[in-house]
Amino acid sequence: MRYFAIALICFLIGCQSNKKSERVARFHDDGRAKPVVTIVPVIDSTYYNVPWSISEEFTNIIKNNISKQGNIYFGKENSTHLSTTINPFGKDISWAKDLSNTEFLVFLELIEHEDVPIVKTVKNPNKIPEIRRSSFNLNISMRIRIIDVRKRTPQIVLQEKIKENFYIANNIEKPNYNTVTLGTKEYKRSPLSKAHTKFSKKIIDRISDYIMLAKSR
Image (cartoon, rainbow, N blue to C red):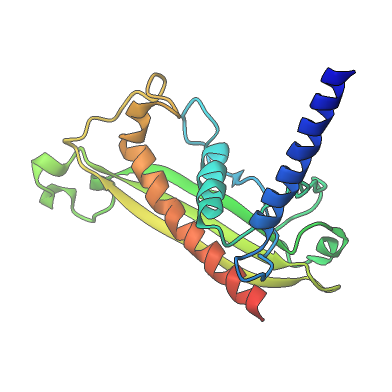
């Protein structure tokens, strides 16, 4: 019985601690509520050949870095289950009014992720120096839509496409991504990881800026 009492006290302390930490996460130091945001996992409409989910990679990079900024709150309950018949980028967004436990919905779709040899990007490949002919561009495009669901009628806060080209020199050996996989130190040093991180920063900045602006209104 004594051990049960000790365990119960520890449990109650833990609960209070969790509630306190959740409140700290939910509000700014001055008491203002942070925007409650749901970022739906990135839709990957590309066919880039790596043995892991690029959708999960981008989703984790974006969510983790936004969390570190400390200006946005991701509630535990913010798991959005959408019907497969819903087009999150369609004209009709009336379905969003039925969603609860969030203020802003963020949809991301990776629509381009492709290695393009430098020789295919110019009209006259013969003018490219021999030393550069095996280089390539990694072209990445992602579209963003942010929906404000605080009112009865949902409103689109941001809708745009972000596109970036990353030059990969021919003196950089392309890793074998079957062995240099996501999460390894070798992958973090790879051209692909660096490109994903740099590209994600643009996405993160757009999401954070537009949500904070909408929240202030």
